[in-house]
Every structure is written in C-alpha cells, then in structure tokens.
Image 1 (tube, helix red, strand yellow):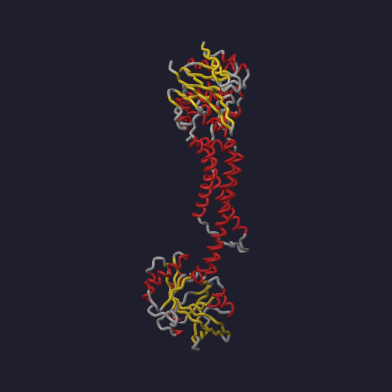
Image 2 (cartoon, rainbow over the protein chains, first blue to last red):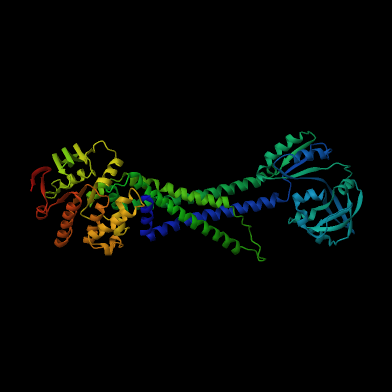
Amino acid sequence: MISLKIAFRFLRSSRGQTILVIAGIAVGVAVQVFVGSLIGSLQTSLVDATVGRSSHVTVVPADGSPTIGGWGAMVTKIRGVDAVKTVSVAADSAAFIDKSGRTASVVVRGFVFEDANGIYRLDEALYEGSLPQTSMRVLVGKELKNDLNLRLSDTFDVITANASRFTVTIVGFYDLKVASLNRAWILANLPTSQSIFGFGNNVTSIETQVKEVFKADKVAVDIEAAISNSSVKVLDWKTQNQQLLSGLQGQSISSYMIQLFVLVSVVIAIASVLAIKVVQKSRQLGILKAMGISDRAASMVFLFEGLFLGIGGAIGGVLLGLFLLYGFSIGTANPDGTSLITIHIDYAFIVASGLVAILAATFAAVLPARRSSRLSPIEVIRSG
Amino acid sequence: MADVIELNHVDKVYTTGDISTQVLFDVNLAFEQGSFNSIIGQSGSGKSTLMNIIGTLDRPTKGEVIVDGRTTARMKKNELARLRNQTIGFVFQFHYLLPEFTAYENVLMPYWINDTKPPNKVRLRAEKLLDLVGLSKVKNNLATKMSGGQQQRTAIARSLINNPKIILADEPTGNLDSESSENIYRLFRDINKRLGTTFVIVTHNRKIAEETDRIVEIRDGKIFTDIRR
C-alpha cells in the first residue's frame, strides 16, 4: 500500500520530530498507566483491607429475635446462589473475660472453622498453636495476648451477660492485622459459643463472601429471595459503608478526569503536529496527486502517520508507566522492604490505555488527513 | 496518426473575490500520437495554464479536453488521477522529486501508486531508465543528495516508468545550464523516437522550441502561431 510506504518514509525522514511526538504520547500514556494503576491499586488495597476479611452479605435475625433457628436449610439455599463464594455461620455474643483478676470486654465468636476460613483465612492468621478442635478451647488475638500477657494452654474465665462463668483454655493465637479485632475477638468452635450463651442449636448470623465485592448489594437481594424467610434480614457491606464507597467513587472520578485531560492533550498535540506536517509536505502531496495518487490514498498517509505515532507512543508509554510503577513501589517501600501500596497490575486496563492512545492518535490525524485529501495539485505546482 | 490530446473551445477564467481574469480564450488544439511539440510564449501568456489543463491538473472553465480518446469533463477526481497515472508523465520545472525517497524509488513512484510490489520487469525498467538518463551510479542517493541536473533527469526517468503515451514537460530545463539543457532535449528526442511517446514541452526559449517538430505560440491566452515543420 503506497500510503503506508509514504507515511513510514515521512516519519523516518523527520526523525527528530517523530521521536519528539512519540515521546509526547508516551509521557501521556505513562501518566495514564501510572495514575490509573496507582489509584486502582489503592482502591483494591482499601477494599481488601475493608472487606477482604469480613462478611460481604450477612444474614442476621430480624428485629425481636436474638438468634436464627433452622439455619441449616438457609445455608444450603444461600450456597445455591451463584454469586456466593463462601458461607459460614457464627454464634456471637459480647462477654467479659477474667484472667486472674484482670478483665477485658470481648466478643466470643463461635465458628465452624472450615467454613470461617473462607472468610477470615484463620489458618493464615494463626501464628501460634492450632485451631480449637474440642469444646471450651479458644483462640486469642495478638493484642489481647500482649495486653494480658497470655500464653498457650493458659486458662481464663468467660463471664456472660447473665453472670454465668465458663473456664476456657487457649490453644492458639491469631493476627487478623486489625488491632481492634485482635483485641476484641475470642474465637471458639460453634458448640462452645452456643453452650456458653445458651443459644441451643441456633446461630446469630450467617456470613458470606461473594465473588464480586461491588455486586454485594445485588447478591443480597438474590439471597433474600433464595431464603425467603421473614425471621431474618439480609445486610450487605455496601449499604453499611456508604462513606467508603463515595470516597472510592470520588477517587475514580478524579482518576478518570486526569486520564481524560491527558488524552485530550495527546490528541491536540498530535493533531497540531500533523497539521503542520500537511503544510510541510504539501509539495510532495501535490506532486503525488499530479502523478495520480487518489485523494483517499493521500489522506491515508496521515492516518497511517497518526497510527504509527500512536503505536510507538503506546508501547513506549506502557513501558514507561510500568517502569514508573516499579520505581514508585521501590521508592516508597517501608523500612522492612514491604511496599507501601501493593501495586496490582491490571493488564486489561494497561492494554486499554495503549489502545485508547492509538485510537486517539489516529483520530487526531483525521483533520490533517482531510486537508491532505482536499489539497489540489495545481495549487502546489502553480506556487512552484 | 490519431490525436492523443484534443482541446476544443477551451476557456479558462480565474476568479478571486470579485475579480475575474480570463487566461485562455477559445483554444482549439490537437496533438498527434508520437509527435514532438513545443508551446512557447512570454510569461503570463497562459502557456502553463494550458499545460495544466492538458494534463488534467486543472479543469477548463468552458470547452472540452479529450485525452487518449477520453472526454475528461465528467470524470471524477479519482478517475482523472488514474488517467494521469497511466497516460501522462509530468516533468516540471522545479523537479518535484520526493526528497524522502532515493532516485530509484522516485522513478518507481508512479508505478507504486498502483502497486507497491512491482514485478522484476518493472524494477528492471526503472534501472534501465536511470541508465538511459545516466544516473545508474547515483540511483540510491536521496533526491536531496543530487545536483539539479541529476534531479531533473530523475524526474524524466520517473515520467516514463508507466509507459505513458504523453509526456508533458513544463520548462523542464528552466533552471539548468545550457549544456544540461541540451542533453535533456537530446534525451527527449531519443525517447520520442525509440518509444513513440508524444511530447509537449512548454518553454519560453525559442531556440529550444526550434528543435521540435511543431511550435505553438501562445500570446494573451490565444494561439498566435502554429508552425509545423
């Protein structure tokens, strides 16, 4: 194709200009990749920290009833909802503990540990000891352990609201990376909690994690429909974290705005350079037209130039952007070497940024291409 | 021989704003296939305009232009482009090579416009044409790395690559020294004889015109004299 050949040669002959334009686009794409990835990563980390180790959709007793009975059937129905990843029941209640006269206010949580692992990743969080296998065995969080100077096999008393007292033995320590939880939660198996608080076979909540966290509100509706039981109500994390969500949304909007302006400046830069190029190359275009090149082929020269510049800029920009991200994660690492923000490389986003730049560059070439198409050979020949 | 170019009652008027200037007045002219012609006239006489109309680069305001038996009046821009590409070779005063390409590539350019992968036959033809104009040694030089005479000879080789029936040369030696000019006319004559290509050469130099078989003199946009020898 003659247009391709000419476009390539035009770019090659003005190498300095070509490199400059590609560098300009590359910087734009790099900013897009860097800012987009950084904000995306920040959001992922934030969401992960907020809801990663917690229930996304929770079934709790409806007003008036303290516990949920017949939960086995409900769990089966919830497991049948497609978007649900894990389901775990819990029997929780507030209590005090007493260790040799030192007391603390806690929440005793009774789990089926195999199920709870799906949400709380307790096997990862457990850093000493083992999960409770039998009754009246418990796990204690890192902060509470330090506060009360606890050790494995130590015992302490759990005092319930109605002043019943049960002695439990520590079989392990966990760290959920949230100090307030580490301080407040005493983890036991389901029968232990049920018997301490007199729940019988009932539970206090059914917790779930869903496949897509941002669809939790929709999944909640599905779960509600699936169990169709008026004795319970279904809560989702989104409804309960409106502030966080609007914060994330604001962040996304600012990220989109930055990306939009970068895109606009890339388009303007390419359009203006190519517009100058049409003037610079009008002599060549005039003679090509005299020799019989079609208007379409003459305009394609500039579309191809835009395309080549876009491809060059996109590749350069993606590489530069990844390099910036790498530099950022090294440069802002914590003293222990862990990075401040875990950078999640979203390949789809990066490919999309590159493609958008290529499209924008080609689009920017449309006006210069039209000018080239309209150029009459006689104007060039007459002006000498 | 049949006429390869025919102009019937051609007028050309240029309009800029409210001012109209008529450059050609009722021009009737025909050139035979294989003839060697010149158009002479003072600058401003309308000879270049006539040339551009013959070459379908410009359209007449009135009248008819027939090139190689085809009436051009109703042809679309792309059809005209194809006609030019296949039938007419241009040689302009200021060379008009593409500086981004080598001499050899410039010669191939009119062929490339239709097909960027020329067969061996065409590539050999480009080499032969460069040889004919004495540029074999500099064929891989960029246009900008050649002298004015070399560039002009490249333009001549280029005008011949598609075996056109007509060569239109507008002041082809206008900015060359007299020796180079003579060489180029000799070359034109040689090509005319060997390939039977029709030549129409616009010049203001009467001495050069006298070397051709027919001299058409334009004065004030009209044919003043038409001398065949």
